[in-house]
Image (cartoon, rainbow, N blue to C red; front, side, top):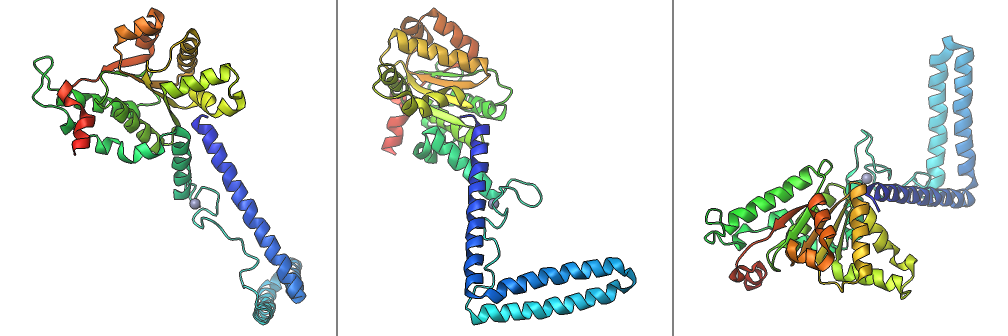
Length: 333
Ligand SMILES: [Zn+2]
């Protein structure tokens, strides 16, 4: 699902809510009129009085002022009676008014000055989060919580830049990717040992983009390809697999985590190629994270795969030291 489809779905939700409230009001009116038929009559009289007065004012414009004053007087009398009837019958004075889930936008998603209502943003973010499979993870993993102190500032793999500085640059690059998401032509290949923050930074990007209203899908390679295999062998129906398989092609950003841990067959490789090609053709970006180096990926998938990767991805090497496993540091507190 692209974010535009999520927007349409939210608009439909608003429509359902508005219809529900309109039906509820109609039902309240029906019951009120059944209980106190005079109310319906009074409503009719008020409308009639107004219409008559407009007509009279058109015929005799010179008397418009007097007619209007008389109209006000009559409407007031009718309204007073209406209030009395409602009180006597214990009927809520607002029975014929529409109610709203969100009074700010009257359940349209837009405020009177044509701005997106806060409830719209809330619905959008909720929809995007649940669509992404990332829900819980994102509460902790976002740019604000990406702690560079997890990385050594003394170890300098190239003799000049410390691991911490290097990872700071990687983080900034990820931020820029979010800022320029529409104009970016490539995604990221995050590679390096596990525990160095690949999944964490993928989640940061996911959260940032979803908060900006883009759809993101996160899939562990093992799960993605096992669903695909299950479908191919008829173990699950294509319609059951569709929410995942469709989203893989259509999300604004697709994250495949831990590529190379799935069981690799000719078919899963073809599926992977298809995803990358199809998405690239539609200018949809991806993030792939893997513990394998690009050279190892060539061995696993083929040279053709790696050349595609260089075409559509920025390869980012996550570095550290065996003692610099940030996951271990985090657990230690
Ligand atoms: Zn609202």
